[in-house]
Length: 315
Image (cartoon, rainbow, N blue to C red; front, side, top):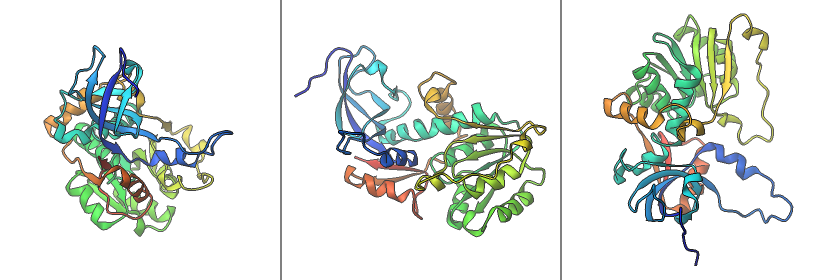
């Protein structure tokens, strides 16, 4: 039986995250000599049950990027992607360590504060607005920066959710717009001067319509392209680079790790403050019970579903 040594901790995983980006890893072709069977890794939260690290104590709460195993030794913990949550939440809210105080929260934080950099009075469009990231983007943009928010999602029920719970000013049911031109017409009515910012989670014709609707000086944060994750090849966009020159528009992709690990910004401190101040209040979660249901939860991301906010597997 493996024992933990100096600098190691032993942890119990309480919650496992379910995220669209993991689709790419599942599609990977095994290399020569591999069986194709391996332990998946992703974002988790849990409790330290034993420690030989000066920085961690038994009972500490954490979020991390680790293998999906219920109990495990974390070697050389100082070199791992792991963040302490002990003073930020109680164990009953530990699922927030993979949500609003974890990967999805830091993704929303980074995209809004560092990539889009809103100014009061501007307008933002957020695709997948009822999801784990989009629900937080709308609250940060509106309540922290004073931005007008437009969100899209896949049902009238979810439109009501993003407006009543997440505070969005406007909602668009993308199942009721057939193509790029139809969405552009909707956007023209809601933002006649154009969109200042786009937080892109979906791709496809939604991106094309938003880019065509982008105002001068507009910014686009590319977070995800869930509409295409199951495709063999990514579909090209109708992006016209010449449009961006004299309008000084900008498109930027990003990942959350520099903000999640504290290399950039003040994510944990700022988000905790916004939670306490009530600027971020709508923290929705959809729970699936038991590690055996992780695949069921993951499949639901790519189908029409009733999921709201962050999808979480509770161990």
